[in-house]
Image (cartoon, rainbow, N blue to C red; front, top):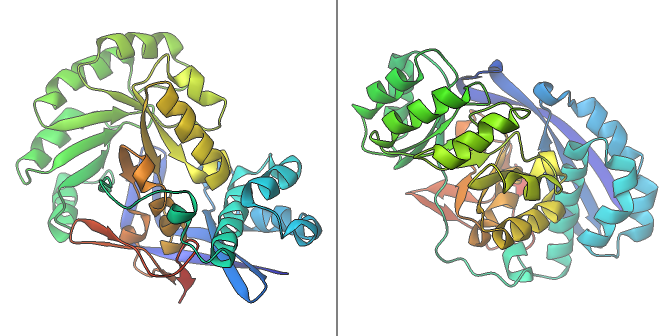
Length: 336
């Protein structure tokens, strides 16, 4: 078995701004796990907002190298449990490793992941395309440069309703809005009324995570569905979210990879929640992994590679309003 780690700096097409800050590039870590003539790839973006660095992820992953070598013949789920005690403090590192283990395992089984899980590629949800906070002029320009039937609009300004009203003048696309936890309950309820008439589908994480009283009010009274993001990080959050949200957004990096994400999806469906999987700003390696979960999802946000100027990988592609899979096994991604 061989374990190699590759840090990259992904350049973005445009400056990307949300309520937490702006960036023009995104550091990411690629894990390459080789055994028996196959190489599996995984990825996790180093997100400063969560205190995650490529150096920290690399250090933590290398600490479990011997464990991996001893257990490389086991299933991805077994390996996740074996490495969990050493990586539970760094879910991003565990995600990158779990993804690579899944890719390697799928290749050894000579099946793409979705077939390994008994799924079919039918009735797949379409990804939204994210428009970050910017001037109205630039937000309109980004939409025109990438015509798409479904946009996620990042909000969290004092002019959020006005932004949606202005953007609506330039497209008939469905909007989703992501307030990144900066609205109040009253703002959310009022904004929902106004935005419903502007063809907004749902609101993602309008309130701060600790505002349970506010979320309970929004959950009961909002005319638009609300989807948990920052409130749904790990597996144990799913049941709690069912009290305050109509659906959850699962991020592989935040929960620790494909293994826990599949369990979260199953739990959410059992609780009657809508399920979305979201991406970070990442290459086609990470996006290809998400793609195999599509048959299980109601919504998906897997546009990370579409926002890049320099994608470092080849794999699942998104164009003509569809996801196009490769004929490779495992995740189906390769570094360029």
